[in-house]
Structure formats: C-alpha cells, structure tokens
Image (cartoon, rainbow, N blue to C red):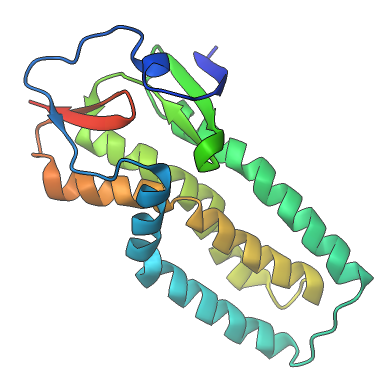
Amino acid sequence: MFNIKLKGKYTDEAQLIKGKELPAGSNQFKESNTVMGIFIKGMIMMLPLILPMVIIGIIKIREISNEFEVNLSLVITYAVMLLLSYLLIYVHEFIHALLYPKSAVKEIWKYPSEGAYFVYCDEVISKTRFIIINLAPAFFLGIIPYVIWLLIYDVLPLNISICFAILTWITTLMGGGDFYNVCNTILQVPNRAKIFNYGFHSYWIK
C-alpha cells in the first residue's frame, strides 16, 4: 500500500544502487562513512536537547520520591521498557518511510555489522521534506511523549514514571544520526536544491 519493503540484511551498496548511475551534477554530503560515526556525531549535536530532558526528568522524579528501591515491580517494568524500546526501532524506521512520497519504493534494511536499521529511498525530494523525514521519529516517539510525561509524571506509579521518562530519552537518542543529517543539510545544501539517497550516502542536486 505504501510501497514499504522489509529487505533483510545489508552488506554492501550494490544492494541499494541496483546498477543505477549517479545523476550528473550530484554533490555528495560531507559526512561520516560509518553508521557509528554518524550516530556518535549526531548524539554530540543532540546534547543541548537531551541533557535538559534528562536533568529536568531527574528533578521531577525526585519530586515524587527521594527513595529508590529496586524490587520485582521495577525489574518487570524495566524489562517491558527495554522490549518497547526495541520494538520502537521498527516504528522509528516506518515513520521515516511513511513520510517519503507514497509512490516511491522505501526499503527497510538491517545493518548487523553496525548494529543499526535504516530506510533507503532514492526518490528526489525537497530540502524541507528531507529535514522533516529525519526529525519526525524523534519528535513523535521522543519529544512529544516526554512533554506528555511532564504533565502526568506525578500521577503515575513511580516505577512506570521512571521507565516512561527513560524510554523517551532512548527514543529521542535514536534520532542521533537523523540530527546529524539535518545539520549537514542545513549547512551544506542550497535552499532550492533537491536531495536523494544513492547507496549509503545522501546527495543534493540543483
């Protein structure tokens, strides 16, 4: 329906390019060559966002109780949170895919050697749309739930409130590589240029 395909394990760019030639006049983003490099740089760029989220969260949790007890309830809640965070990786990628043009083919790949998942779509899109596609998962899965948590943190059971907050931090941090892409887009891509993926890199073209 949305042209989203689950493709399995990624090993090399030939799986993505499928013999297509790079369009003339294309300009490759100046970016890291590895997922880990992209993610680490993105997390550093996210510090002005994630640090206040964590600090405010800790302050709010301490308002509920200064006593913290590790018990069976907390262990179960924490285990559920970890399971949810893993499942939300897929949701994160589907949000990316859904925001590309409906007619475009979107592929979701697993990259075992880098411990990552990613969406590949070589459709040419606007700079604005590319930025929205990259920011949307962290916004919908991390920032909005965090704001909701700030409104209800003191009415939730302590264990659930703590794990809810941690989950919003995790889902926000999942967007580390996406924030890196956005920064590169803002700094490197002219306003009227178009953006597309070719292999494991992003390119812009006028």
